[in-house]
Image (cartoon, rainbow, N blue to C red):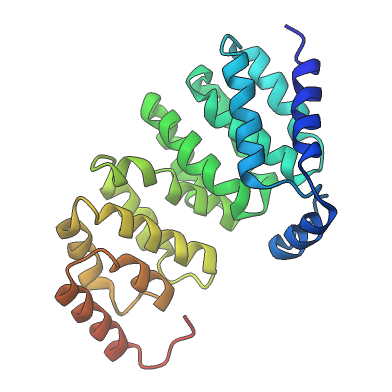
Length: 247
């Protein structure tokens, strides 16, 4: 199937709803080198869902052509559309597609593209193909903090649902716990917070011995869903052991 008409229709739909004012604001907000056309996230998601609804029969080769064509254009909204389509058609992906996904993650350079890809695409793909754990282990030690963040967030959905491999996530998080990078600190706290929704005792047991090593960003996120008394005790322990912090 020729995907060119699908791409043209998607681009036209997204562009028609864009505004120059929003383009300027979003580019400034995300501090991105990409071009912006000024379409909203709901507009992009709706356009991608409409494509999926109209073409549910697309097979993996067609999906990959669609993704590559959108991604090669240095336009933020079109790359976001590619990520959304990747998510919508993720059941068609195979383990080997982790190579393409990693390339996209490395070229994203922003949470606005990385986070959905890591949590909603990599995570379920890893669930289907456990052998991808080798790649995720490598990501957790990568020099690029966006790739390390992706390793952390790949566990998010499974852990939030009460499953997942918390021990593995804990190893990743423990190794990154004293990093200065905000997006790593935030990701650790985010996954801990969402894990604690169903398994607060598991998170409490992990956080307790590490309050002195955590940043303020991490611990404040991690304890949000813990019982109030326990959360207060952990925060007090953090403040007592680290009287001066930079977040």
